Length: 373
Image (cartoon, rainbow, N blue to C red; front, side, top):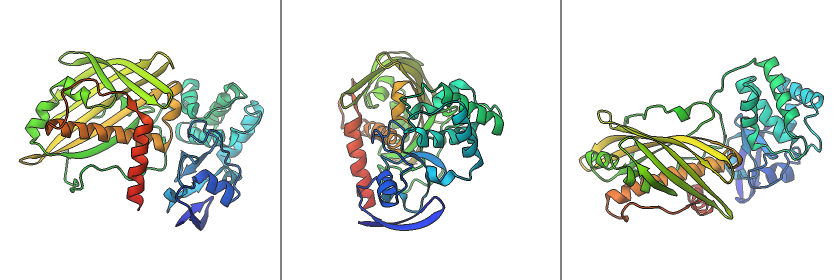
């Protein structure tokens, strides 16, 4: 058992929890806060959504022991909240609920939308609600209710950066050396606006900066280091290819194309593009920015920034903290592969195999557990 101290619905609590206990089970079973519903238990349906430090998070795939020092608010805490009262009233007027099972999580997400964005328009509201599933309503009433409350409380706004997850675990690290010295920042990319998720990792490559920079001039070498990627064509400033993703029985193949640019003076660059999975009609656009800075004669600081927007069926997997940490792991694996190739520990460029989500998540959980011990 592990003792944790946290704040739930404004009340400071201390409790003993098993490491395997999910936040959802802790709330429902230990505290009797049954307004948080448990549906898929895979972080997909959104019924278990609560807020952690003010941002929506999936409680079914968040461990209770991760909540040390955090502030959690469940649906029970919003009785006197002006925004939530308006949403509840509008949900009733627009017939935005039937069985009610999804409603607590839907309301928490809706409140986050209108407080951040006001009424950003129907398309953006639907995109923001993509991580909350409802089997009854068809969503029309829900979308209208959110728009009405957003217009009344916040007006119509342009899209702002989406806060996808609240439980931001400590970054996974490759090298224990101090990286607090100044380092160049990659240029902002188009994908870092709107609803983009942005993941940044800094690693140390045991090679001279000039050698690492020369490596990034070779597009096939760079693509071969990205898990699941396969390059089919490329030019001086463009590329075409595929990223294959495997999640148990679920497989996706993102076919896309994009650009590649380098800044010789600043030692920065960007690989960006967009792709589509024909089977699920999911779409992704994003960029991988990189910046180099010498740390010594034979050592280089490599900062990688991945910005991406995922839409369609596969977007259901992109809103949880676990998904965010998984993407962080992908960026880390890319950095490892770059370091390995420069150290001549890897094969020649080629297809790197499907991106095995479950396998990498097992590695992620193991890494997280080691950090907690």
